[in-house]
Length: 435
Ligand code: GLU
Image (cartoon, rainbow, N blue to C red; front, side, top):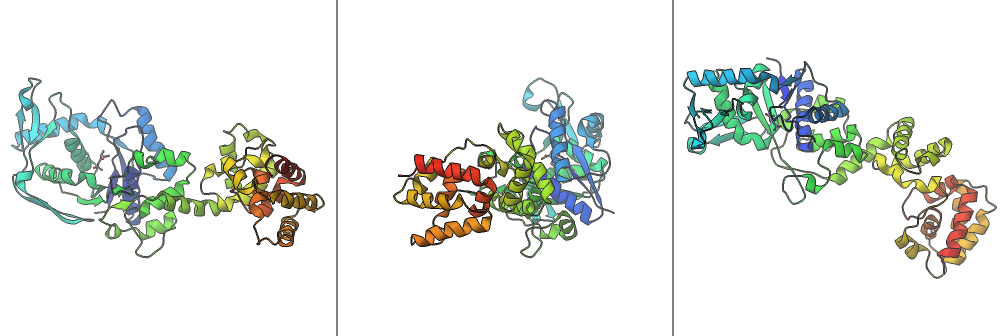
């Protein structure tokens, strides 16, 4: 039978990276096997599953390119089928009615666990077992007639002819119950694979307290969909060699479940950021410009960015941008009134001897042709004449003309800022910050 897998999110308003990783692994598996990847919205919690919450799931999937086959199944449309199945189980003797806790609220339907030790072969974790005494009967239909997660989940997997259930390992305990339900309903039990937990630096489940945890946050912070997709595949899977940067096509061709790891996967934002920078560096310049344009358009100085200069700055900065929000730091290229980083000023300008060096550099820059090469020659010359090591004057010049100690190559930066601006800023720094 050909592979049919599904992503079955419960919409809550945000999509955790652990959930979307499950979607990605299912998608890759389906595409690798030329099977079907289906979507089921588990929206039986009517309070949380608002249309907006559902849309958030769809947006996250769309952004990451997680295309699904067939129309999505909304669990809330299947309540009658769920109720019917509970009745069937009741009639067949697999379930019984009880007023749980004697609340007087009415009877619910309870599924009888088979009373045998159970074992299943997880395609990722291997053989997993649980003894009968540790498995208690479970409610499948509440007294108000609504199905519980277990019944709805299993019944819809049967309805959708799911062959493989790949989900987070927080569901391992549920799986024994689900297998028993499949069997009682006379359905073929699908293969199960439980993905390793995503953990933080302390080895605890990765949560929003550890940093960005939701797909929307990564998008807002300027991560590329391709980079996040790629990075998440590495959280619990590897191609079997040390490759890390892989396109979607390559991932589809390489992805197999036997390479999914069973041990926990540690979230590493630095690694994700590094990967993101690689993706940004190789995107077409035009696209990068467009992206950065949309970033600066949200800032108060955004409309000060003239087209030509903005393009040149993008060209200079693309290879060192870690995320799309990089442009937020480019203000000094476009406005005359720049901010100065106090610490950087103290460390680089407010020091004995710097004044004379900057005065000399300024004098020579006043008559230079302002190519990066001649700027470099001038700064090198001043360093040499004053017995300084190569590059020692770079930071004082950088802080004087940009207000900050970080940026692109200083000669290119100075050239791009232009002669008039640089002479003015050097003059200001000499007068106000140097001693
Ligand atoms: N709605 C469940 C969840 O998001 C589905 C689990 C499953 O994939 O079976 O955890």
